[in-house]
Amino acid sequence: MAKKILINIGIPLFFLTLVVWFFFFYWSPKMTPEEVGSPLPVASTTTPQPISQEDELNLPGKGVVVQTKNFYKSAQEITPQNDALLIENEEFQILYYVADTSFSITILATPINTIRQKAEAEFLKQLGVTKEKACQLKVSVGAPYWVDEVFDGGEMGLSFCK
Image (cartoon, rainbow, N blue to C red; front, side, top):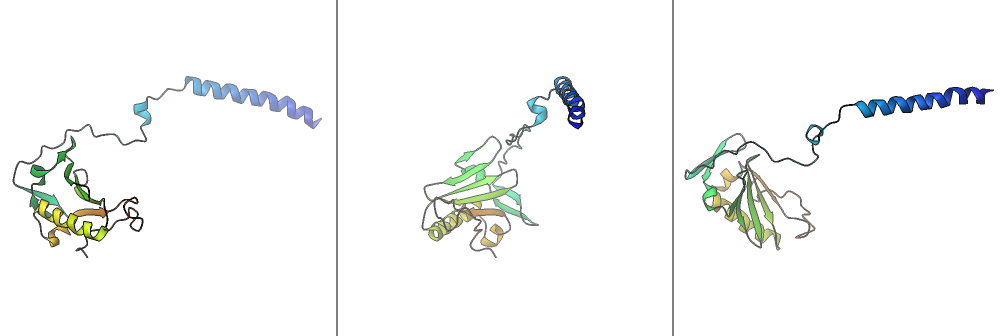
């Protein structure tokens, strides 16, 4: 008897649920990919600020403004977003990112400490700043895993900053 009640109520309830589900999803408004959003970062559609032609730049630092040489004038490459590849060679790479006004120094060869010293010296030269001023800027120093497993892409920071 209970089995018959379950069948008489369960089967129609199941089909009613399927019909409601079908109508809900069939007639619900369809979202375009732009409305849904993309999991990938989308390049900014805003026009980047023009690059200064002055000899010096004022960059925001850690609570201060740091005056540097205009490294754009000697950059190896400048992207449409005004990010700058200051230098790239077989030992290291120095990049400037406009979006967060930060620098990235990537060590690409070993011995890590020797190359790090060379990269930091070149960084100071490119910016025309002292070690103390460099420590006030946002700078990331690292080496990918394939260069040295010990550092494994971790943040080393500038060696002369506390």
